[in-house]
Length: 526
Image (cartoon, rainbow, N blue to C red; front, side, top):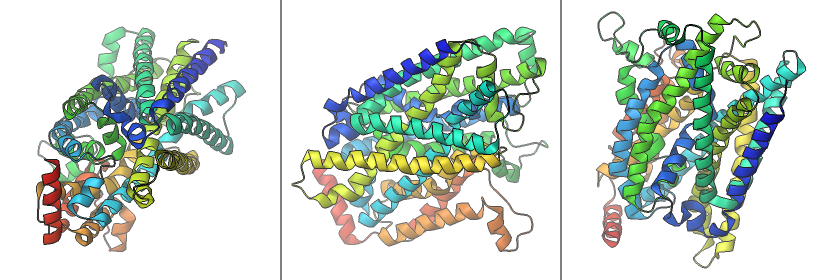
C-alpha cells in the first residue's frame, strides 16, 4: 500500500500551519496584540475560529461514534440550545465585555464583587480547561495507534497503545504550543481558519466516498436509520416522564434547556471561547459571528453523525472481523486507514490533527491570558515593560502545555485499559462539574446590583459543585444510604450547578461600598 501521498499531505499541512503561526510574531509583541489581536480580526475569521474551537478531535471521532451506535441524529438535538444560548450571549454577555474593555473576562467579576470572586472564577476555569483539553487531546492519537496496527500487521498490546498515544499527543501539543506562544491569538485565529477549511473538505470527501461504497444507495441508508430520527420528547410510554428526561442525554428537553445552559457557559463565561469573540473589530461583528457559529453547528455536527450512520451501514454490508468492536471512536479512523485511497486518507488524517491543534491552540492562549492577567501582571506594577509582560504570557503558554500533556497522558492510560469509555460524555461531563458554578456567579453579577459578595460567591460555587457531584456520582449517593441512586445525564449538570449557585449567592448582600464602587466604575465607562 502506497503512503507517499498521505505523508506529503500531512507534512504540507504541518508546514502551512507552523508557517502561518510563526509569521504572526511581529504583530504579537504587546499584551493587547498577543491576547486580543488588537481587536482587528474580521468577523468571518472570528466565525471560523469559533467553529475550530468547538469541533475538537472528540467531535471528529466522537460524533461519528454516536451516529454509529444510535443510527440517528438525536445527538444533534443539542444544537437547538446552542443557537438559543448564542443569541443570549450576543445580546447580553458580549456588549458587557466590550463596554468594560476586559482582556480576561473575570476582570468584570472584580469590578462587581471583588478580587476573591475574580480569582476563584479564574482558577475554576483554568483547572477545568486543562482537564477537559487534556481529555480531548488524546483522541487525536487514536489514528496513530490504528496506523501502527495496520503497518505491523498485528493488534497493538495495551502498553504499546499507551506509548503511541503518549508520543503522538506530546508531539502535537509541543508543535501547537510553539506557534501559539510566539504568534499569540493571531496565530490561533489564522491557523484556525486554515484548519476549518481542511476539516470541512475532509468531512465532505468522507461522506461522498462512503455513499459510493453503500450498496443500494439512499434507499439502504434511509432503511438503516433508527427511530427516533431527530426528536425525543422524553415520553417513552406516551406520557412525559421527568425522571427519564433528566437521566437521558439526548431529548428535546435537554436540547431546549440543558444545552442552552451548557452553551451559555462555554460561550459566555469560558475565556477559551470568549477571548476569540473579543478579537472582533466591534461588538456587532462579534455578536454576528457568535450567532452564525451556532447556525453552522447544525449542518457540521449533522455531517459528522451522518458519517457514523453510514459507517454502521457500510460494515453491516461489508463485515470486517478486524474492525474495532469495543470502541466506536476507532471505527472512523479504522475506515480511513483501511478503505480510503491514498491522498484522501492523508487529507482526512490532517483533518483530525487540525481539530486537535485548533482547540488546543486557543485553550493555551486563553489559559495563559487568564493566568497572567488575573494573577501575575497585576503584581508587576505599572512600570513593567511589554517585553517582561510578554515573557510571562509566553512562558505561561508553555507551562499549561505541559499540564495538558500530563492530563492527556493520564487519560490515555485510563482509556487504554477501559476502552468502553465514551469520549463526548467524558469531555462535556468535566465541564459540567464546574462551569455551572461560574455561570451562576456571572448571572448574579449581570442581573442584580445588590446581591452577592466575595464570601457568599465562593460558598455558592462550592455548593453548585457539590450539588452536581451528588447527582452525578452514584458512589456519593451510596454514602448517604441511597440504594437506588438518581444520576442525571451529563447535559443537565451545568443547569443544576448554575441554579444551585444562583440560589445560594442571592442569599448574600453586596456591601454598600462595593455597590458604590461598581456604580462609579460604570459611570466612567458609560
